[in-house]
Amino acid sequence: MSSGYFSLILREHGAEERARSSLLSGTGLSEQTLPEASEITLGQQLRQIRNTAHLLEPTWALVTGSRLNPATHGPIGIAAVCAPSLRDSLAVMTRFSQVRSPHFRLRAHLGTAEVRLVPEDRVALTAEEQRPLLDIVMLSTQAMLEAILGRPVQEARFELPYAPHDYTSRYADWFHGSVHFGCREPAIVFPSRWLSVQSPLADPVMFDAAMQSLIARERLLYDDRLLVARVEQLLLKRGARLSLRSAAALLGVSSRTLTRRLGGEGTSFQTLLDESRKARAVLLLNDPALTVAEVAYTLGYEDAANFGRAFRRWFGKSPGQYRCAVAE
Image (tube, rainbow, N blue to C red):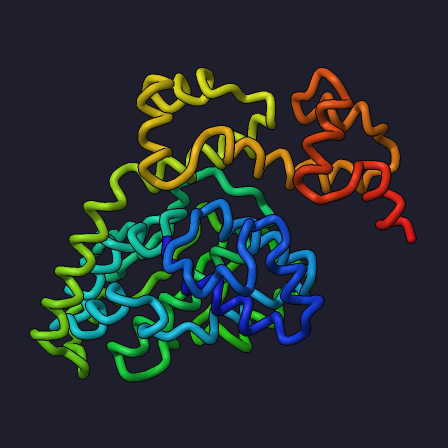
């Protein structure tokens, strides 16, 4: 996926060196390498989302989502606002949403009275990842609709699947329509008559150029980039004991095919496994109730010494030294 959102979050919330370091932690990216990385994996983006949730106040996603305008979404944003009408814009957003952000897809139900625009998760997300990502998606879609309508979407209804929480009252600061919590699915609901609204930014030349770019990216997306994200999610859900053979079976491909396709994306199952182990090792070592041997076993190492050697290779210190440094 594009590194643009990653860079935006880092720039928006990483004003201090310590904050930037926290936001980059465990992503495999650095301030030096990020400018060269036009594309990142979904796993790297999700790790940054988790880092941000730990670092900032819970309203960070609302602030970030409110800063996104159509231009920040690249070709999909350009195509959406340059399309002839809102109906055409919805066709762009529902077809190509996963090209820009492979974790979700927009689904539209065009009723006689109302339109329901539903963001659907394409990969398994934790609660820590799902809420901020959904808030960002809803707010950025609101901005897209308002660019076409030329006014705030006060008649729209925003339905969220999670229960009211500590900062529920703050949603009115960013959402321009009514917000409802505890709904059966996330959705943006608005009057069907909006579909015929002509975009004030309609531009056939820009629309065609953006569409050609999206079609080319769509071809690239299927299916190898999504495959990397799916392996990362399997490792997150099943732990570091997942084997290449098991992962391949769960994905419906052979071990050889999985190895080849991951290689085509510049990675390997072992690399993804190591990244998963590194992230979980730090998390588990922060729990003083677990011994180093227990952490090693949880991560799939039968011998704690092998875990110790791997940890030194990753972080330049032993697990025990890491614990002492954290405790200081």
